Amino acid sequence: MGECPSPEPSERATFAAMVRPGEKIVWELLRAERMDGIKFRRQHPIGPCFADFACIST
Image (cartoon, rainbow, N blue to C red; front, side):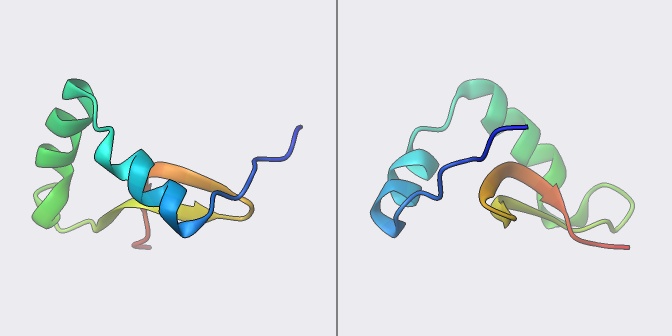
């Protein structure tokens, strides 16, 4: 499995600003614990990569 490049802080802001319509819809459904109280984050680091959405609850 290849390594994901770790974007610089300014690049992360650029990625976050380039929200596609589908991502916006998914985030609206996931944010504010609307999925049975499960918490999600956007642009969350996982190892050397960044996930668009990540569930951090157990």
